[in-house]
Image (tube, rainbow, N blue to C red):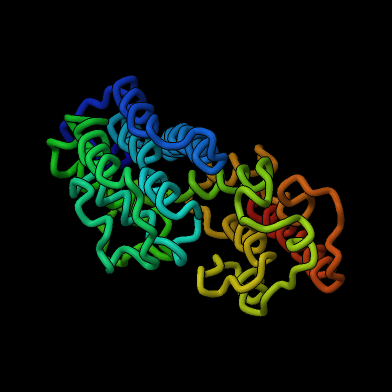
Amino acid sequence: MTHSEGAAEAPAAIDRARARAAFDAYVAPYDADNPRIALKVEHTLRVAELAQRIAQGAGFTPVGIDICWLAGLLHDIGRFEQLRRWDTFRDDDSADHAAIGVDVLFEGATHLDDPALVHAVPASRPDDDAFAAHACEAGALAAFAPGTAADPAGAELIRAAVGYHSAFRLPDALDVRTRAVCDVVRDADKIDILRVTCTDDVETVLGITEDELLASDVSPAAEDAFFSHRCVRRDERREPADYLVGLACFTYELVYPASLEIALDQGFIFQPFERPFGIRRAFTNRATAHLMNRMDGHLRAWADERTEA
């Protein structure tokens, strides 16, 4: 959605104030005392702003920038039902949060118990029906952006960006415009996940203690992914420290030059190795400590090559 690609598109106005108010209304019934809920609200707002910055840096049209901002605002809308039902960020132990987001935005939240979406059936709660009704009404795309919801092309861009934001790889069949928007949102999400994991505590994010993280091994699959310069697949994360390696690998797959610039400016890229979750103690697992030092040097050299090119 650069200027050349978007010259013929008809603008579908996005009222950002309305969209933000709708987001606040959607998350209001969820437990604000749950630190994971608060974390996701803050993460969402930052991703929307990052998506705008990346799109601007890539030369998107004003309409394209608005679409990227809205997609950033909505990308994790499925997390709130995931946290209410399972109180975890782990899709494998709950449900595909991206698919929940698509269901809430586009399907009236009618598939929240679908076995194709749910990996672990949650215990029923007395407020399930009320929250399903809330998701159906307050979570529809039209509540956030009526013009985009009424525009098939715009709605499909949002559907793709939300549905694929956490996918290991984007489908090959995506058209150029859809891929561009998806890449912006995926980059913005990666950048802010690095921040979250450096500013929040390990128990909130991973559900383990600092001691457990510092004693952890790095699995061979995660190590191979790092030195192959690719992201770590979910099924390759076997040890707590694999999560840190996976975060560092995000840097390799940032698509837009502006994304790498932003990530380097924020200074969180190397934190998984230096002070993960703000922990200043060294890894008690000596092999892991040695490997993390190697990875830190390798990633710094890679980033230097990219910024000097």
